[in-house]
Image (cartoon, rainbow over all chains, first blue to last red):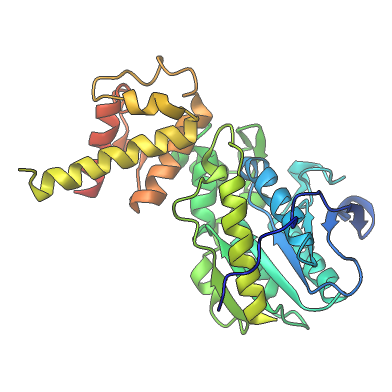
Length: 247
Length: 91
């Protein structure tokens, strides 16, 4: 398949964006959508990374959305309940809330047509859990630097506050701890610890792919993320190919 | 003549250098890292969040698991010590 056309003025001007909430009350999802609202070529729902990694990835993902809009692909990025502009306080967030929120975002995509899911880091666990038992199937699930388990996700965050093994024991004992500014307790971390990507992906009857991000910067690992131009270029090129094949 | 083991060892060193460069945003300063270069306390970018992120990056890039028992006060003291930590976990 030839490389998608990335030439011309595509992606140079930021596409208009729409800010809205899906649902009501504290569980309402703050969303940003870009690209054609009617008759898009396809829709991409982005399932976000966890905690600080989401902050580091936001510029990469936002620029990717702008570039996709210039190719008539609509995209949606949302804040998980308890994060970003969500009305739910972080300490009240739960894994089940996040799975349901992800389903809600994907279902929003269905209303506009062919919908693909881009799951980034921790978002891979969420997206895989969400895609089970949905009435409609996503056209594809595209993983980006997926984390293999909830244990790995939490281990990274707990390290900021001390010894992950000791802190995990405290969480198991019912203590509340703060790591990297995030309040953690077993009601949130317990279900996350149980998640493993392999079993979650088993039995998912939808097309799957993974972005090849070797050789480009990894903003989720950068304390001060650099300008992600090369990463955006690589991401957009691969997404256009994958969506072109699966649509 | 460079032996294969030395070549592999150098590859580890260069990957650790690349990780520090990327995580901490060191730019060209990363090229000046030598085994005796002081890290913790000398690189202002290396705070607790950065240490945690470096460890995560090392685990993911080298497909290793670094327990807290593997880390001593000296592990992040110098660049060479950090490289040695990775080598030991890969051994």
